[in-house]
Image (cartoon, rainbow, N blue to C red; front, side, top):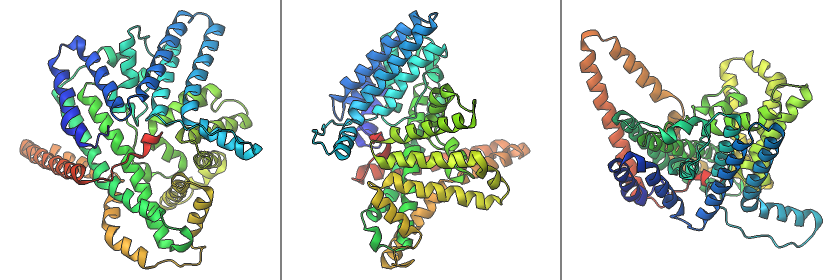
Length: 478
């Protein structure tokens, strides 16, 4: 079930909200758990069994860790077993076919490639489960002896399918004690509307352009066409994923949960390192706290530090998908992070800010080619076309057509990817606060303007939901 579907918007969500606020408080977690399991089972019921297996495994691992918390050696072995079990579950369903295919290719064998369907969001709920056990081990969050409460943390439908990755320590107390207020509900509604608008108007339309361009042969497209395609895809994946995160954060706030931010205008970054502090923040912080720092982080010799960075970025690529292009994408970013740490960061600091932005955007946009392409050959040919090495030329009829038809859309998306509206809102509020005796009137006028804005976005989004058949979520595959 998609957030951007008529079933969710007009049936599931209203019923869940109504039931949640009319039943006694002590039953609300059970209500949310049941709704979350139904949400996950809507598309393919058998996948619920896999998630329940993950929940049961991690529930008992946490109990065992907690009962052995004073036995350092024993508990470390338990943590190792927990990590192995979770990665094995993830590996079977996400990477088994990839591994067997590569074994056959390397050793010229003929092993049967398993046809195992990929459960939606398995990487997300696996990381949630591992976070729970590790946080109990570190005493960053209290043990949940009530299995239903622990199951709710793993399966809570706002963040279940595509994040953000909600670390247990950030919501441990909220699972049992939280406050739902009208102010939180209003904020959550606004945040959900913004996310839905991002998804339906910007992400889907940019995605339509990107899909059509990437269906072409790079050897027969112009440089301008290649840039239109990759810029459209860069905007699609940002608004698709950040839009989903906005909706998840908004839904969580409606029910009294406070999820941490997952995006902070990544395309205004001045370096690759800054980009990853702004993009998919929950994944970056997860790998930092649960992998990079345990490996030694910045401590140790220069070799050890760069080894740790290599492992983290290799893991980042693998986490995103069972494909060599994803692995290359992760290592590509790892290489730039290492270069910036070694010397490139100092060089960047000495050049004009504009050049820093151009550098960061160029690295990121080229990186998205590997993320979007299905093969290295296609990625290499596409990048060659982007930089004018395929002999077709800079511009052609196709590029002119797409630019004339979708140029305004792409421009609006570029503006939306920058903190322009945030700056306008901040300046307006600042002027209102300094208005003196007219503060109340000005504030009321601005509030009415914002309400109208949200209503317009909601109406456009709902119209798009009802009329659109193109409605994928990129990160569902992870």
